[in-house]
Image 1 (cartoon, helix red, strand yellow):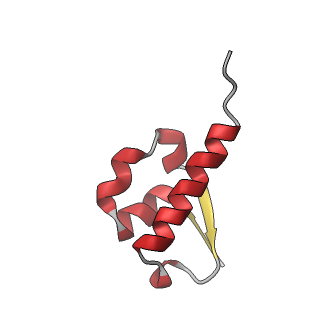
Image 2 (cartoon, rainbow, N blue to C red):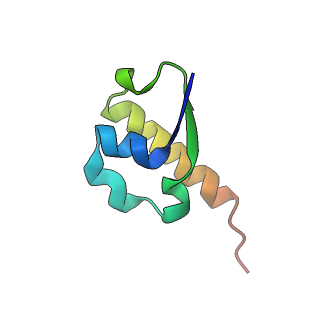
Length: 62
């Protein structure tokens, strides 16, 4: 198991996607079962989507 900030994962696999993430999303720690060596763009897209959705659930609108 390896824990990495989302920013490091995106920067390694798909750096052009960094602009899609807010600062707090970039710093979200993600636990990778097999490390970053096995990740592809599809995996990173799924991780980014999950982090964005999770952060959106925690946002309170008034």
